Length: 565
Ligand code: ADP
Ligand code: MG
Image 1 (cartoon, rainbow, N blue to C red):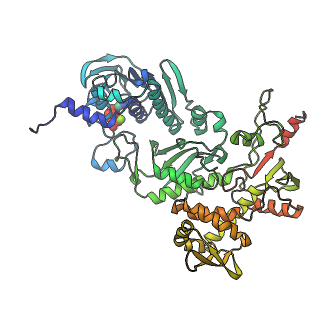
Image 2: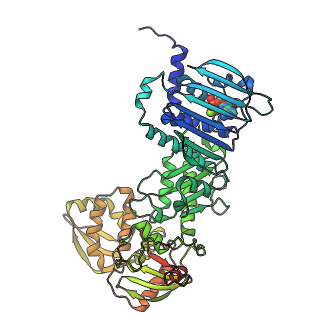
Image 3: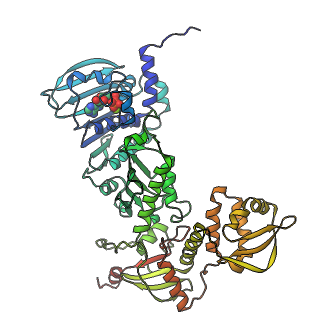
């Protein structure tokens, strides 16, 4: 075995392997360069899934003619000067690796026109070597064309998926940057077909419409970075999040931009999921587009070859800032959904006669959207009209008719009450006149042993009593005599649940047991009390499982249905 220093081409290909994994990585690097150059218009054109052609055109500052060749040297960058600068990065690029890496695995041509130069420059490279450089006219900006990606690296080529799949990943990159930079107009064409166009008008909502469509954008709530919206003045969290009924089946709808850099982060994803806890239907995931802006020194961007992950100096602060900002947006601004929205979101049985009102799409053109009711953190004051089907309370509010699901609403009320008692560590307890013996299965016993203290925090006073039995001395007052049906169900549920979710599970179980059932007749006073309590809830619009507690038929809708509008 002889040790030797590898030749330049092998070294370049090894380095390129880190940065350029697939066509979408090339697009990402070129778009980042365009953004760093201050472009306000960026167009991306690809052919054959990006393997045949990738062309990114920008109107940024351009590259001066005497530096164009230098830009393709390894570690050549205009963005940092010294190790110190690594702790204060304001640009997307900083390593000077993208252009040489791309040139090592593809044919590259650049036409660029720099600020203050009469003529522009053309350069072409093959295998990393400059083939041709000359003057060429070009307005301010840069066009980089990449051809025959990975032709010299067949191993890489083999790992690529179909052109359609690679196109999808490219579209993802461009979409994410369109969301990150609403002030930049992006276009993406794949095999001569336009896939995406963003207006670049500067409003995030417009970018969301461009990327996700108007229907989804309609249900996004603003996360504001105002002084009261953010706990930590150094960490600004802004953007938009989906209202809870917008829950998606997959987790792929979270976009995070840390100082404008698109990153993936489990920490941030978890912070958002936490903020939605108790609001989303089980198994559903939120939609969010969030900008996290913090002093560059608070975040290390130099930890990942493709710069797509970052490390925060203080994870806890960032986590809390994101969770609170999102939670605040959700609690403050979720309006009572209109009945069609609920039908659409839940695919409620829409067959005629099964719902209170027909919800099929109407033939006539859609009426102009109603102005949303004042965005209220709580419900408006409602006047109870009566009960229907022993399951729903019908009420009148400032803007039309409201229908409340009595069980879901009561569950929400109880859920918040239990949680509050738990937070204050003051569970309301009901002592049993005589301690009861309670027998458990081996599986339940295992949970009991582990969870007896947790249960005590909610008001259960339990003591081991011989083999697989316990003495019950007290129970949560909210459960009362229902404890004997609740406890076995709860213990079985906890047995299959991660330890970290036990508390949440117990809260939900207490909320559910003893809640008014569907099918239960309520007196007018009971209904009024229930509606009053719901009005006082912090998140009155959904039950703890994320289903709606209340839907609204607006006065405009009523008028329309009766042909008065
Ligand atoms: P980095 O972005 O890390 O600096 P790159 O290899 O991506 O490294 O680019 C090298 C240099 O080329 C950049 O620092 C920048 O000065 C210049 N450059 C690359 N693309 C553009 C562009 N589209 N517009 C202006 N300058 C560019
Ligand atoms: Mg770069």
